[in-house]
Image (cartoon, rainbow over all chains, first blue to last red; front, side, top):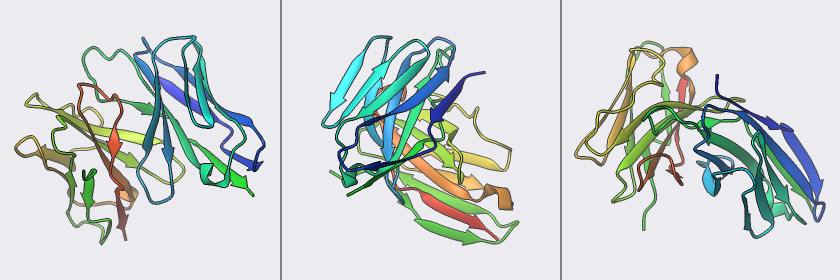
Length: 113
Length: 114
């Protein structure tokens, strides 16, 4: 069964304290791994798509990496505005069904000034 | 331009009543998705529309749930005979391409069934 597990569930950092969020996955034929950010009361906002092991993408203080079993979201020198829940999702090879993204439960990040 | 619009933003209903949730996707987006997000749980896929193709209904949890998309644009998710376990945030998303590449989400409808 396809599955996405994110850790930790919650992470508290001081401003400037770098860290990483983990997303472990099992999927039949990975077509893509996605990172989203979700603020309270809002829908998820797209951050990155990774397609194959070894791929990396960066945006401001965020860097996403991918291996065959997991993805990391590295946060360098975070600021309070980076506080949010970060969601990881995967799409596998479902024989034509394009819509079924499998989401993890997310990591709630709090950055204190 | 405008993003994905969902209405109502909040809905409180009594157990056993029917509810309709509306989603207005970004203009030109051919793909539309409904997800459900329960407290402490990940997003749960419900249904996917792509152009004029038959929708992928594989995520609908029971026959009380149905959805339609009129004219390839606005979608309505209907829950009949609501139950307390239906309480959740219902999120709609749309995208340009076939498949869930870079989904654009609405802010969701918070459904509370008393």
